Length: 188
Image (cartoon, rainbow, N blue to C red; front, side, top):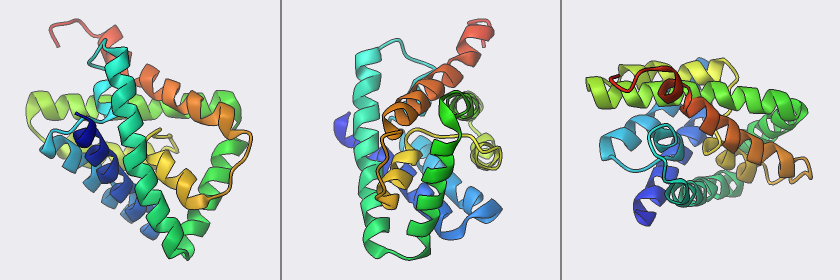
């Protein structure tokens, strides 16, 4: 599972890297490559598992290896420099400026969309919810805790606010990923 979780992080990091390179709607659509690849390979992603498991230690392990994979892509972006690094720096500054409560809420929205998209793929067999869901969370300004590691590392600007910001994003994604499970009957 460790290698698969690492690979999943790399895939999400590739999507985030594409978003940094293009930005806007085209970048948001390109980002979907990451999550589509995750579900087609069947590798574990924190936001894909958070709404379907009660195994918290296992989920933490997935998260840990996911962020290592994304950090590797962030290092790649940072080492190449250029406009993608500047975009990452702007994104990180904007995220921190949101403050704790808004950051948490933006992460809840992302978790909800990702959980629904992955659940629909697994239960209906279509990648369309992912193809539309990923750009949806991006254009809504929602935060994905795994992809954000790519942006954080690519920016290479550390701020003490990250000590509250990032854990709230992880928690917000977890809450959002569990909205479907808590509100819908088990038969769904």
